[in-house]
Image: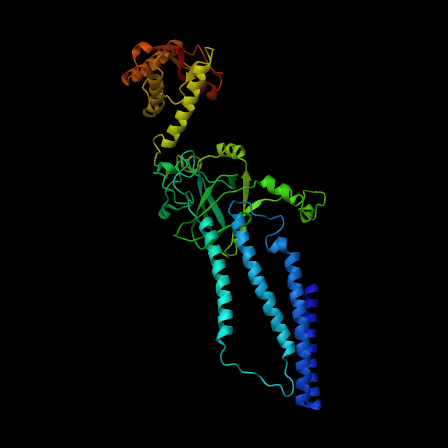
Length: 498
């Protein structure tokens, strides 16, 4: 209803304006064209003067009133190391262009009044004035040169790539309709290669899984970065033109299909620190949800954001993604909780190049796990604490034949024994309680001896180890469940001397 009333008001105003025009035209004919033109010139001159004054005052007032929202002043200071340079460049440009804007508009409206047409006034035609042309060419040229030099300095600072030997982290952001796919490197600190031909529903980035660098890369649902760490963002697009925009960090770069771009920046303010800054601003004391006046305030719910600054389609709005800047220790904790995309989505699928083998990533993870176990065992004073279960040493069902995949765990044992030449161990085989006791005892002994033989064949001296089968006599868990029996069927070693 309100919209209809507004439309009717516009129509009425238009009709009134048209009628006034007709009345003015009739009045002009009655008074005579020359007198009417003179009156019109005077009226228009005054109106231009009034309009110019109101326009300039309105411009100055609106710029001041909305400086925090439209011009980036107030609480929204840059949260990155390079942001101050860009803001300073914009301020200098605003000063020079503002001066030109005010002076030219004052002259424009004043001249419209002062030199309005009058009887007997003739227009002066000046063919050429070299001095005037030099002035209005030289001054803008000098100002532009200064602005360009300042801009080049800022550009060289902001757009500089990583120098050799610099400490930094690299992540990747790929724009698509309508989302950002983020990719972080894993423990190796390197992003794996990609091939667009491999893109499908299971592999949205076309990662090449035969490249070991890809195996520990992960895809988080939010952009989390540590404060004070230089970040190089590799920016890509999967379909149309997008734009990687972090407004609070003064970061903005196109994501172009087929042409990787980048941006390097250093976050200097955590999300919590930025919220504390906004806490002091009156505008941010309002409820974040107008329907819940007692709920969280605007400053409490503030978050940095990653947006797309291109109109990339109808779903453009949905490309907003949360950004969190945290202290280094909090970032490290968050990093520990991330799982590689390969392990969560590709392992065991048709795309897995290590379908029948242990992937290099798992080999590395198992070694880290093993090293932690033996470290704790060497430091322990108890018999139980000096026992290390070899979780990844397995046998064929009902036999003492080692499986092919056991070699990775046994290689860790060989390396451990070679590094610690004073260590002697007891290799122990265990079974569950199912079946014949005597057969279980014999099987556990045979399995312990199989490990003994493998280690001996790979360089571990026989005098530093012995093999014992305990059958089902030393269970770790109940034999009443499948899970418990699986734990009891194990091979382990105990450090005897070190």
